[in-house]
Image (cartoon, rainbow, N blue to C red; front, side, top):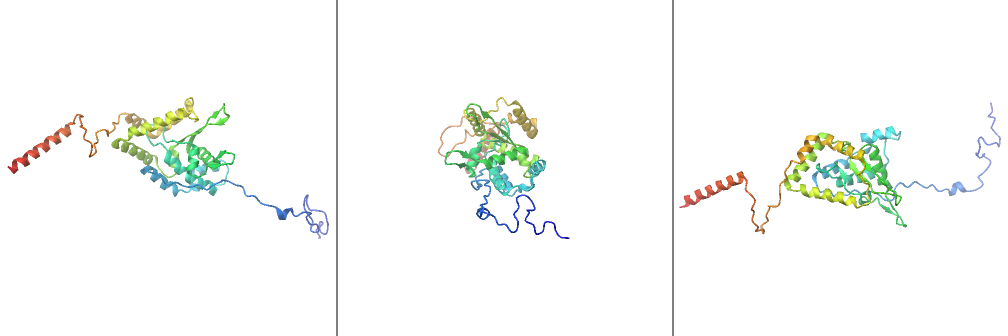
Length: 303
């Protein structure tokens, strides 16, 4: 049986062109395919961690497979997205997470745990994702989208606020959840021990007061900056406090205030001739008396 459409000039469907007809213009030959531009710059990872915990976390992040991150996989399944993350987003995550680790506050005596003590613009500038247009407008959309994905996955907390006078958004405040570190393979016990060891190290070296002063300066600086305010966000404050209690336990939090800091005010250099007038402890008095007895015994033996 012959095809009923054979040897006819009627197009098979609307908009089709028959074999005998030729296109009237060469538009198809001149058509230019424009690829969608996801970013303006390639992200760069800075290797500037100066403390042991930051170096360990950065080393784990650099070998992490984002396509196997269980929190991101759960998010993408719920949103019915493909499981594999785009390569540009993965490169941004590698650089961005290293910066979040670098600027995070690991002091357990702060009001809230793991606050990122810088703004998003600085994060984007450090990883070379800050793009400035000729008009002066600044853009760092890859960083914003990566942070939004981490927030939706339950790894970070972001505080946003709109300035109704200028009709612009204020700078965001970011906190890392403990799940942020769990997603890289850290257990709660291991992470808790790392944070407690850092606190003990600061107490031993007399650096605890310095870290407290840095946090106070950070809070006072936020009060005079165009940053989202947490003062009247009671639900968020309760959430952050509960996260800290659940991570550290109330017993550890109560013992933080009782931990005495080793003072460095009496350390003398080789050229320091000031007198130490503090009261000696019983062990120091006992050690001095024993040294005096040994010295007397040596002098008597020489006679």
